[in-house]
Length: 224
Picture 1 (spheres, rainbow, N blue to C red):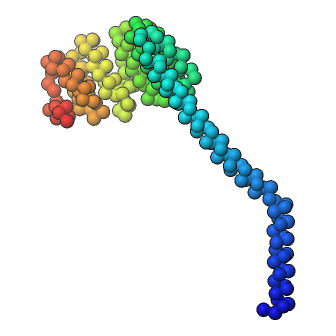
Picture 2: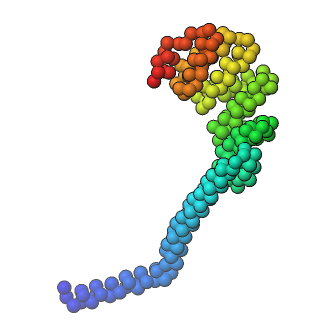
Picture 3: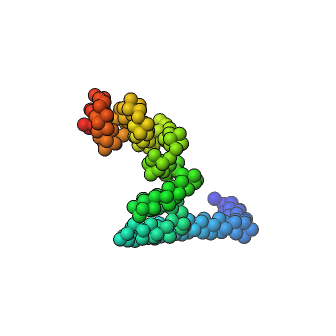
């Protein structure tokens, strides 16, 4: 390489550095903003995560403390104080609180609370569970047509609590003296893949007590 070429290359390199420096001087703040923004966003997300974790731990500690009370009344009162600030866990706390209210002899309060859950914006799973518990708690005190309509909705195929709702449909049929319908429903409960072993066992006992016959395939399922 000649001295002239070398000189030209050095000058060219100097020009490139000058241009780069000019660009950095003019637009470098953008890069800094991006870097600091990324760091700040990451830090904020981590802070949020730690806050949620701390809140969950605090809620868990409060629930354990509430359930350690000696009486159902004290447990229900403690849970009532936790639920409003528990976020998405509030619905679970209130479901447990309804059970404590029942244990304390306050069935009417429990039903009111469960109806509030059933009509709230909670997840369908919790709303359906609350509705089923209302039907079970009210039993024959609920108008037969209202009770039947509620159970029909809960016993639709694909519903989480379908087998339990069907069991309640059989109970209603028995109360109304329709043994044939009760046996038909209970046989279906025994054949439903969603039914638990304990639910199949209950259905089998009622079928036998009503003088019905347990489906052969249901016996195989019960033995699994």
